[in-house]
Length: 141
Image (cartoon, rainbow, N blue to C red; front, side, top):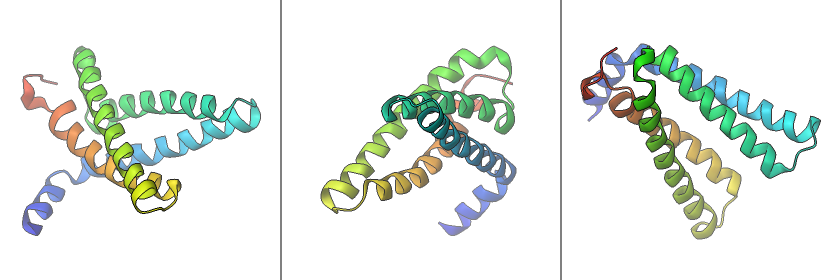
């Protein structure tokens, strides 16, 4: 297993690095937008989080599409549909982790959020690499 993982990381090293850079950028963007909407504009916390989420997901899609995977403009529609599937899968992962952490383990919802960030990052890379932006699915650059 470790030799497969090592070979996988070696093969996709630069893509993984770009993915992590996009993830860090969008994480800080999300936090800054929540702060801006909540603290400066005085929006309700649900509106602040929702607005920041929508903007951050759009940024995440566009940056990964152009920077991490170098996709052409002619595949944007299909890429967006497949990306939406990934977002839904990640939502289910987040929900499942939150239920386990909060309801079964009796721990903090924030701990659940932190744990889900790790698993969402891992699943996002794998889903984007092998499904959303995969050139072997009949779509070329």
